[in-house]
Structure formats: structure tokens, C-alpha cells
Image (cartoon, rainbow, N blue to C red; front, side, top):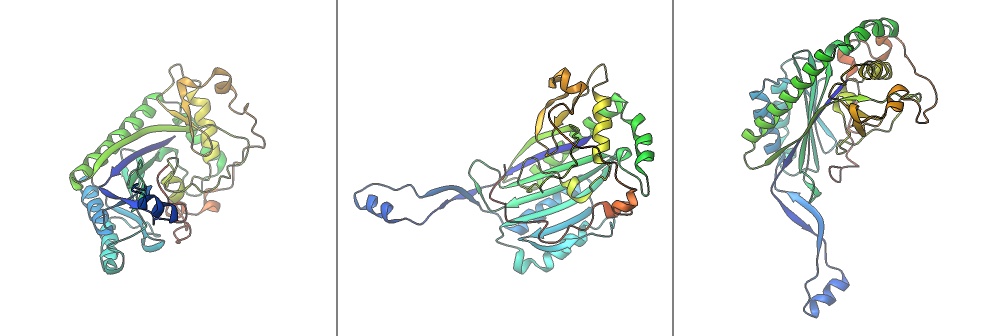
Amino acid sequence: MKLHGVVDLHLRGDKLLRDPNLWDRLKKTFGATPDLWTGQMKAAVEATTIVDATRAALATIGVTNAVSLVIDDQVLFEDRAGHADDLGDLFLAFHNAASVFGQGFRQLRLAAEHDEAGLHLVLEVVALTEHPADSAAARVVISGRVKAYEPKTGESAEAYRARVEPLVKDPTAMEAHRRQFAAFVSRVADALRASMPEARVELREAEARITKPSRAERKVAPIAATDRRYDPYDRYYPNPYDAMLSAVLWTSVFSMAMRPDVVVVNQQGTPLGTADEIPPEVASDPLSAGDSGGFSDGGDVGDAGGDSSDFGGGDFDGGDFGGGDFGGFD
């Protein structure tokens, strides 16, 4: 089960105008007013404002573990070793470079993590200065997993399935985790409203998701951080047994007398509907939609990255944080 939440931050900005062309100048000569607006806005915000406001918000909800800070493809901070209570180190690293990165920027990504009530949560602030007028200037994506559903170090596929299968059959626990997550996302939104009074903070979604199983191996193109389907947990802490967990969850959810309040997504993270909206023939045979291939259980967890800090892995280089596809939030 994937827990997914989005909080949008709408900031004050100015219209971005293009340079007038010959036709525009001719229209102006004859008294007309050419429309030079590109449909884009430029947020009137500095990197220092985003970082300091995020720090203040996270402090009020007890989030103290930093993951990374990247501005314009430059990695200013990354926690490869999984140190605790190092959010202060992230802000120190930023302010040491504030003379270069503290003002104008194209994109800013700040990630932190938090453990609460049996959940492991990853929060990522994604901000950009230029964005479409109908899009937010910044977004906080909050992604969580039930810690009991995550692989243990050195756990084989068989042992993982035997341990997890009984856990996912408890609808009460599933609903409790969903509500706990929704409450956390709400606290994040409230904290941001307090730390950024000039922004309009909108809680877009806070939901539990299960992935529709597929026979094809889960090889999907990286999803840009501006895409609504983006999942920071998958980026920093990929589960090597994710396909197996999806299959086990699917069987469990659709065998319950009362289906829990979860959203079904495909392999790319696109919502397909709630569990109650899935047709009976798809629920009983999720692979009937033309998938091919076979499930891959994978090897031991150790083969997929060693201890738990390694699940978040090594993709902290500038290319993985990639800025090329950052024209606006989808």
C-alpha cells in the first residue's frame, strides 16, 4: 500500500512576457495592443525564503531527518549514511552556499523523512520560479509506506511473502494507517500556512493506493518531480519486492467483504479509480487487460541494496534529480 499526499503552494508572481515580433510591432503601429503574455508566471520568491519556511514548518511537526537538497542540478546536501536529526546540517549547507543559490533559481528540491505510528514518510518540496499560470509555484509531495510491509535486511522473497501476507488481511489496520497518513498531510499543510502566510496553501490529496498487478516486469521511465504521479518514496527507498506486494495486496483487498478506502493505480502511478469502482472481472483477474510476462520475485534484499539506508540508494547525482523536464506541475 502506497500512501500519497500533495500540498500545493501558490505564490505571488508576475506574468512572463515574450519579446515583440514584427507582427506585434505592426499591430502596435496601427493602435492595437499585442498580447505578449506567454501563459507563464514567474514567482516572486527566493530560494532562501523556500528553505527557511520549510525548515520552520518541519520543525513544528517534528520532522528532523534530512535526505537531500538540490538547487539547479547542484547537490548541496545529501544523507547517504542515514544519519538522524541532520536537518540542521542541511540548512547549514544551504546557508554556506546562499551567496550563490540563495536568490534566483530554476528549480529547488528539498527532501526529508520521518517515522510516525508505524509509517515511514518521505516529504519532498519541489519549487520552481517559472510555471504555467494555472499551476502552483511549489508543491510538497508526501509519500509513505507501512513499515511492516517493507523488506527486512537479507530477507528472501519467500520469507517476505510469508511474513507480509497475514498483515495485509487486516482491513482495520489498513484504515488506521490511511487515517494516520491523512492526519499527517493535514498537519504539514497547516504548518506551511503558518510559516508562509503570503502563500495560498492547498491540500490537494491524501490517499492510500494499491498498484494493479502486471505480468510485465516493472520497468517504467523515470517520472519527473513535476508530474502528479511522482512518488519520492519510490525514488529514495525502492522496494525490490514491490511487484509481489502489489499482487498480495490486490488479492487481499478484493477478497474483503467491505473494500477499504484505497485508490487503484497502474504501474506508472496513474489513478484508475477507487477499489469500489473496479469492475468485478478486473478485480478477480487483474491481469486480464493484456499484460504479458511473469512476476519476478527478485533475489535477497541484500542483493538489492544491503541495509535499509541503501534502499534509498545512490541516485543522488544531479542527473537523477534532473531539471530538464521542469516546465510546470502536471
